[in-house]
Image 1 (tube, rainbow, N blue to C red):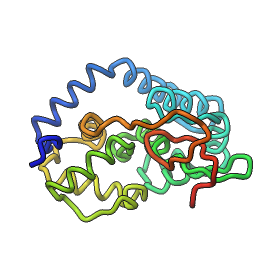
Image 2: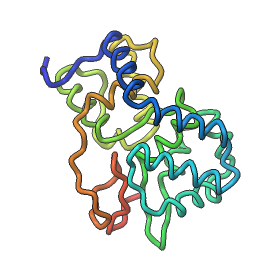
Image 3: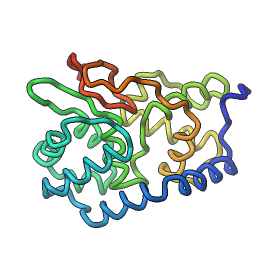
Image 4: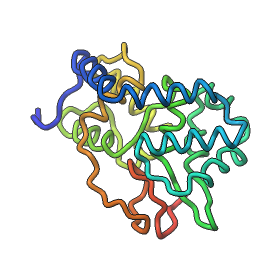
Length: 213
């Protein structure tokens, strides 16, 4: 086993959850309170508050937060029904947004926005999680997947379920497993600049070139 890749176990996930909760208590409780206060997505003002909060506190680095909020409000019919039911397609619907004639894919943000509304149904994706899963797969395979599969949300959900089953973590929710995963991957070392194309990930910049659909 590669010593740099910590194999999941019940004890390690539990310890990671406890550590994450200690270190992120203010963030977690603030976002939970915001969602409790504004659970629906029918009022664009409330959506904007939630977009700003998720963007800032989960470090997705979206710049045109008002445009994203309007997109969620106007372009996704019955979003609250979809979120409550845990429909995976709502992630893609939120992520893919047109702004000033260009198409953007805010994938990491979309998973985090959905997870805040229904953490049991929506596992979070970011570059830390990708880094860990890909490295773990090399030394302790738990399912067949490619890098591209991580960016297709229904496949990502299946992969997370396979990860949970393979390592005997059925007692943990996707939200709890996400706390473990985000502590295992290396932090992304990406420059913070608006004009750089890096694709979807932990840093959802608006790229200079259009992203593929």
